[in-house]
Structure formats: C-alpha cells, structure tokens
Length: 253
Ligand code: FES
Image (cartoon, rainbow, N blue to C red; front, side, top):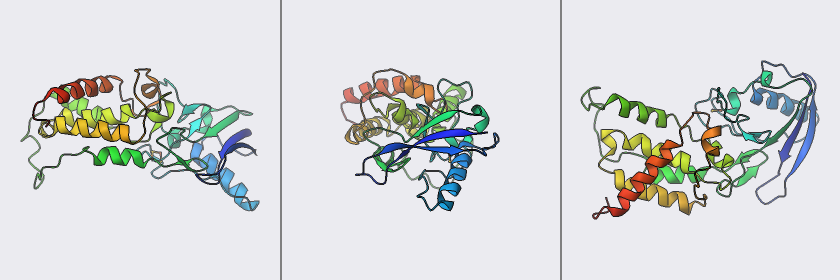
C-alpha cells in the first residue's frame, strides 16, 4: 500500500507545532498503525531526520499508553462495532492511496510533550485522590468470602476495563475527563469493598479532576463513542448520583 501521512510535529512543549507530510510506499495491510509509524521512523532515521515521537508499551490494547488522533478520531475509531486502541488498529482499515492525518490528544489537561506524546499525569492525580481501597486487607481472601450480586460484579468489571488512555478527553469538546473518572469511581462503588470510602472518594476524585484543568461534562457523548473499552455514558450518571449523595452526607464521608 502507498499512503500519505500528515503528522503533527512539535519539537517540545513550548515550541509551535505543524503538520508535516510523509509518503510511505511499502506499507503492509497486516501492519498495526504503530508498526506503520515504526516503518516511517526507520525511513526518517535512515535519512538523518528526527523520528516521530509517539507513546506505546504493550501493543496489545491493555496498557493505555498509545493514543493518537487518526483522521480526527481518537484511536481512529468512532462509534465502531469493533472499538480498538491505536496499537490494535491495522492498516487493512485503510485503502491504498489514502491520506491519513495523525495528531496527538489535544486537551488543556494533556499538554503536548513532543510530536504525538502528551502528558497524561493528570489522570494519575485523579487516581491518587482516591481511586483505591485504602484499608489493609491482609492476605488475599477466599474468593467467595465477600459475596457480590452478579449484576453488580459485572458492572464493576465493565468499568474496571478502562485503561486510562485518555481518548475520552481527546474526543470531548470540553476536554472533560468524566468518563475516565466515572469508570474508576463506578468500578469501586459497585463492590462491597468500595463502600466504606465511597462518598469521600467521589468528592476527592471529582475535585482532583477539576483541579487538573479538565472541562465539565455536558452529556455530549463523544467520550463513549470513541472509548476503546466501551465504557458507557451511564457511568457518568452513576458518578453524578453519587456526587449528589456525597454532598448531602452530614459526616462528609
Ligand atoms: S500500546 Fe498498550 S494499549 Fe496500545
């Protein structure tokens, strides 16, 4: 396949960025999108040019490190029946001769570091604010010692699949991180172990979300349309219900 790439190049956080055009003539349709970028970087390196910086780690759709806006859609998918991460997107999704725009996540809370790499540590700060169970649980308990209804357990698991890639933020016109925050909160609030700190957790995590510079949610739904793990918009509804309850709890816990 021959493809034309228009890639966002930016030397550093305070440098101006611009799209640069590259031609690739030997792309195999079985390559993943990141392998195609590897090919581009090999060619750039051979020409003594600076390779394109991009994030990746597992390349199996589980770590959340990869994140590129492809033709205007985070991870290159929008309302797809097969939602994927960038590393699981294959070149067979494109046609010979295609022109592909490649950009980083662009959001106020995710400043660009270089080229396609952005700083997503704002997500870490939300987790540090309460996205965990802090009681000492000792050794691993017997699997069935804390029974959880199946529907609750399934909902907790569905939300636990969030990999924190940030596609939801990149897609949101407001740059909100509510789908991520709600997935982390809902994951714990559906399980018995998450109850003791439930109200304190939500107030603290939502405050950390706002302090990090994310925008507010207006239920537009772009986040859920691009989420590679299909986290539902209903999780934000759960977050809002819990937040209201927490604000009326007299003891603030
Ligand atoms: S590199 Fe790990 S999810 Fe894509």
